[in-house]
Length: 329
Image: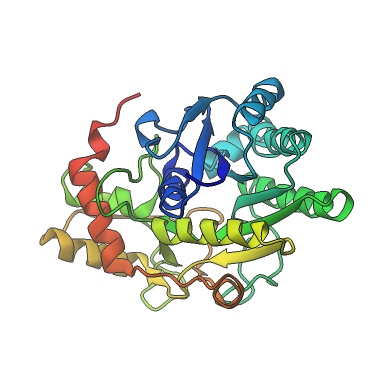
């Protein structure tokens, strides 16, 4: 195998798919994960080192053992509700842990990091589609924690020469088409797995949060991007840094929006039957429409999404039908 990459949070959903793509590209991914939200069975393409990103001594040990040339950082809490209920621990992990990880990397002579960020750093959209110059005004501690890390990374580049690529995801979805890994969160909050569970009779209903938005059918519009397309972008970002290029930020989305009702319709077509829907009030902080302008990633990284919504749903359906339910901690 080729150069070693430390993948913090590599036992999670997007991290594990990125490890798959790294291995296919000739890299050796070393997963560093405390397994609080990840799955040991997802670590299939390189060694697992169990540890927390706030544990500086453990990080030093792992960096010395494996001597990676760069870091890809996924190890963050992502639940918006938890960020509101417990902002202290949330910032302690997402911001404090990132500082510890970056300093450990620098101590090991590493100056390159790919960071898993989010379109939640933009907050309420002032224009759609959203490009990288869109104002950043997060609506909750989750988005603020990611923006804080982006600002820290900008300072680390400016003052210490520590380069990074920030990748702002829109809505990750789908699974490995071969069924080896997929989406599994506890609790699950993402629309596609929740809707699939309702369609398969594993949930009694699917909640429609708001039907009076200023969109084409009254429901929220989101940009669903296949997890393997995200993984491909991480490999492209890594190669960008390894080639000596400057720090940068990129949006990762398809540029196509899908409403919640359109999503439900696509899943009903896959299941060949309707499933119960329950209208509910709008949720605080839900923007009417979030769609990426991905032109910068296309032009500079040479990255273009390969999968559409039907493939996302097909791959997710197969995963949830055959694999996800068997995962146990």
